Length: 415
Figure 1 (tube, rainbow, N blue to C red):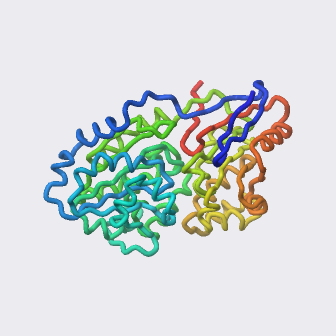
Figure 2: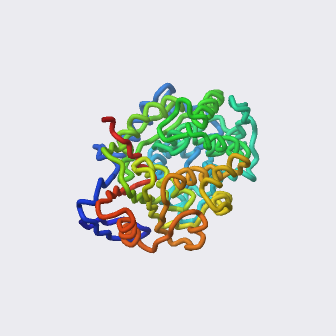
Figure 3: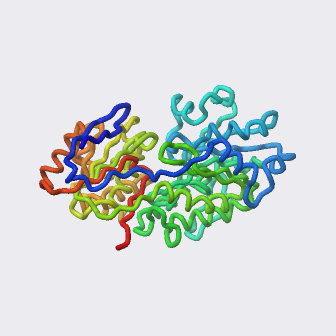
């Protein structure tokens, strides 16, 4: 059986005997209505707040908070609907980079589409290390919620986000527009350190220390004037569902919709899992790690997980790679993480947890020696990696392919 694997701008065709294929996993097929009508319906029938026109009435300093290019959020489509309400008003746009770098020109076009040239003078990029921030209060862990001062200056704030399962925060979207989106570096570091906890998992909110801190941030943010616009996309990045209005209500109302798309039941664990990081998760190795973390849930202990990612911008976080490469075993990486923490180390820790239980292989254009130091076995093609994995695991080994590993969560069905 021939299976076409997206890799960068091309396709890598893998031929595998049908007896060896356990499952080919895609996001669940859902019935999406007209995208613009879905977004418009949410915006003009908001949850827990006045309508957008009433919300903006008399406001003099409006701030839009939008995601960077590491999320597939349909920012351009949302702007198309709300722009008539903003035109002629004083508004700014803040890109919620979290601890990521500023967008490239290509990424600005990805975020804003044809509106970029019209909006570019209004756009500000959050820099966690350099942007001036102010404190709104503290979380239960004593972490000061330090946000970009553009938030303080605004008398109306419109965060635009998308919701999908997140490997340690439970879910993206909602309050994440603010923290880590426009938070200070120290604030993000303190929050992400909590991701080391085994309770910090995809789709887990209760008992997840990261999600609980986001809950605390959400309560603190209630003092602000916020009209949130949140979406859930289907497997083709079309808008499947949307909600707007109250930050908390719009977030929680969409979680079940996100599960409908991205949580895929599986009957058995596989000996080999091929997990593909698609755009925008293939932007770098740091972001592609999500595909590994999601893919591990379909893998037997002692199995082989093969990450496929174009890593278009290289590694991503240097601290993440430094920790991975600093020790001779994944066990030693985890032990080092118990002794010290820098932002980015949590990703290395999550990868090391996989490496303790399974082999990690990678099909990427990154330097092979670097990949080996990061406890992964490099390959030039998916077909070569799968063929070698089958030779190692034997003629009856089972392979599961996860075609959008950055977003799709395999879940073993209860027996």
